[in-house]
Length: 432
Image (tube, rainbow, N blue to C red; front, side, top):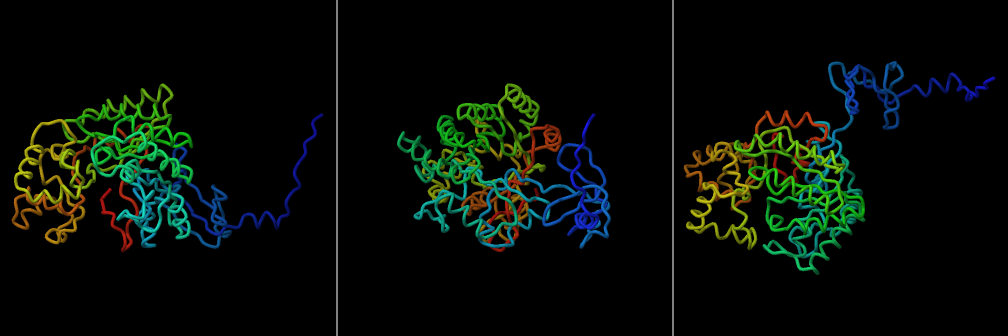
């Protein structure tokens, strides 16, 4: 004989009250994020939480949103949202994210909002990661934020922008900064290895910092050392750093830049799948757009930044140096040559932002068109834009590879832009 014990039945009034909702979203195509096919249904919300999905009587809701013909989905995660700092300056920043369904950003790409020091010209009222997080909490955020600690950030604080390796004492100080950030709640170490001074760092230096992040369960997030001619070697280095540091690896905006490298994407996928098959945790994201975005100074060989970015900008007035840089960009030397990745075509380089008044009204056009408009040689326009710290969007990728990558289960998505929309935001806009 079986004895079945039933819970006490709720009264009809209690059941009726439990079926009341603040908001009901009716008749949408629900894509729930589980990987299952979409299905049509209603979503009931009470006290800011989803409490029912299914068929819901609209009469039970204070407010009804008709989603017929629309998709209803959880908030999207932007795996590379750069920074939450614009939100501190202007409460309207972040609307660009919310309007496309993004409710969480992963911030920090080599450079991070913290740590800072009071002598730094980027000092903004906080120094440690804990202080930065506290200010974000006090301000109130329109989106959720996960924050990495940037390798570039701690390297600059300890060593500066120069081309050299840290001493053992300096490496220890860098590790201490990472440890403080991780204890405050950072999610891992991030790198941007095509930009000085990060480009000067050895694999061992980065692994030493990742090992500290791994102590707290952190990850290694990387804009890899190369995204074109040495793409596969860069993936190998990222995997090596993750293994040496004892951290999972996430590759920011995986791509093959330059027509000569487009055929490498299947090989890149195979490299990552092989590592995953051995048990190594490896993931990547992409932005579904064929123009990348970077500071135009990245077009110049990194050797010219060995004395710092400001030093190079001053030296760019030298006509002989300009000729040398042009020869390097037009040559075949193996380095991350973004000019070559565009097919050596200035019409493939869209200017996203510049502080140079000669060009600021022409933002959104390609460099060749801007040069023609102001009556300049495109190379002169290029060097002037470098001096202004311009942001550009070179077309270097192919739609076929984007679609190939989207099919992989280890791929997620990013904008690589961050919060904008506020008057105080200095983040350049980008179609992606």
